Length: 352
Ligand SMILES: Cc1ncc(COP(=O)(O)O)c(C=O)c1O
Image (cartoon, rainbow, N blue to C red; front, side, top):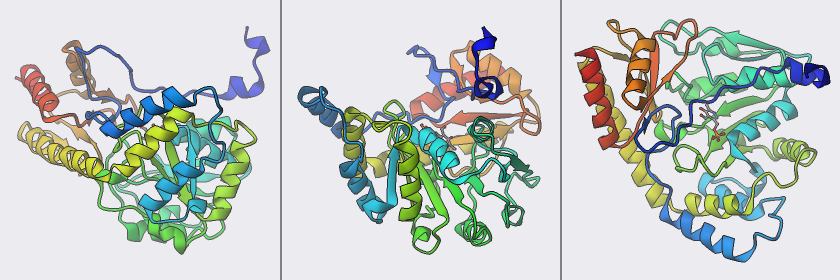
């Protein structure tokens, strides 16, 4: 029935998400979710909202949630845009700031949704090779033709780029938007949010899916100059006025407000990550320096795809990308200490 497909449908190559298997027997370390549940305040807020107002449309301007996010991020409400997961915010940003006739740049090894959006919206792109150690050379991103998108920390490499380098990239693209995708920044040294006061071409995108334990609720947001926010709102309101539902609004507010729970769970994951890195190194793995809630590791002795398959057979799910340069690496999300102990038991059985 391809004859009924639009040219756009024929052209697109959809993103392939990590396997979502809801079997409690499986230890799921493949999609960088948080192993801890969200703040208990999220459940309370959602339950209350369910009793009250689901027969009414949610707010289309999301003022109350934007206000809470603005307070936490130390910016104004006018500097905040909220969407249905940061993937949606990124899609709107591609539409709002990148053009079909001007090539954008992103790293050759990065979040694989970027080329998907670029193809969908017919935006040409240049994939910039990383250095041998998987870090970026910031000069390669200077003076782009159509803009830049860069995750910091990068995925799946887990490597953090210093704010000096990020600032240099923003400064050297004065006529185009630079999107910094900070999905994992809460596990890293620091956010670039304060730079929005100096650079009106900077768009920061964040998510509640990782550090706020809300992957299932679908809330992400952008921070930037109010003119950038106006562009995102134009696109959103040309597409769907109500992208974020009532339960997501109240749940996200509760999660953003519970700063002590956030600090506690984030610190715990960083602590577990550091222990996991040491344990991996003891077993001969080479682990890239991680500033995220996952690690990217390579063993000179064991084939990466085989390790992925053998762990899967033992009910442990990690992520493997069959792609040049990284096909001997596996990406492992950080779970609880207990999950990681079980992971190492199985790894030890496999590698002897
Ligand atoms: C770099 C990066 N950006 C964005 C996202 C999307 O997150 P979400 O749509 O859940 O907010 C992810 C998810 O894995 C990611 O790794």
